[in-house]
Each structure stands twice: as structure tokens, then as C-alpha cells.
Length: 85
Image 1 (cartoon, rainbow, N blue to C red):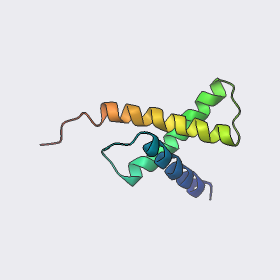
Image 2 (cartoon, rainbow, N blue to C red):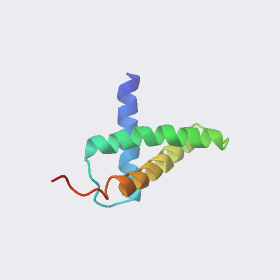
Image 3 (cartoon, rainbow, N blue to C red):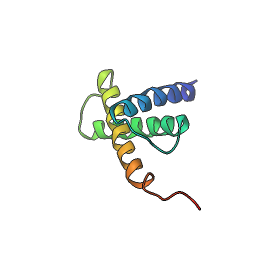
Image 4 (cartoon, rainbow, N blue to C red):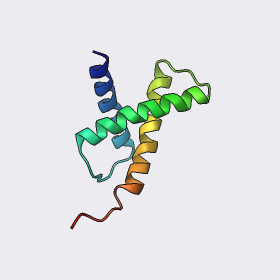
């Protein structure tokens, strides 16, 4: 059950990150969910490292911040590749 919750949370947070940083990205819903999950982990570690609370609103803000960081990196490295021949 925890994995399903993580996927749903990742989808929601990934969608919020896409709303903050709109644009055409390679990949679809699966990439958004994966970025959401990884971004929430990154944001959690970042907020824990900065000693910011990890419950409630802080968890959501950390997750969205992590998604925005990962989405920017994803666009920087993946979106610039030329399409395969």
C-alpha cells in the first residue's frame, strides 16, 4: 500500500512541478511521476539537511522544490539531445 501512495504522491507533486515550470518536455505521465517521486526524496533530504520540519506543508514544499530542481536538470540534459536518426 505504501508504494501506491508513493506513486500517487509522486504524480501529484510532479504535476505541481509541471504547473510551476510549464513547457514541452520529452516524456509523459510516467516521467512526471518518476520525477515527482525522486523530487520528493530530494526535497526531503534537502529540507532535512537544512533542518527544516519534515511534516505537513514543509514536506509538500520540499517535494515541489525537489521536482522543480530535477525538472530543470532534466530539461537541461535530456531536452537538448538531438532526436535519434
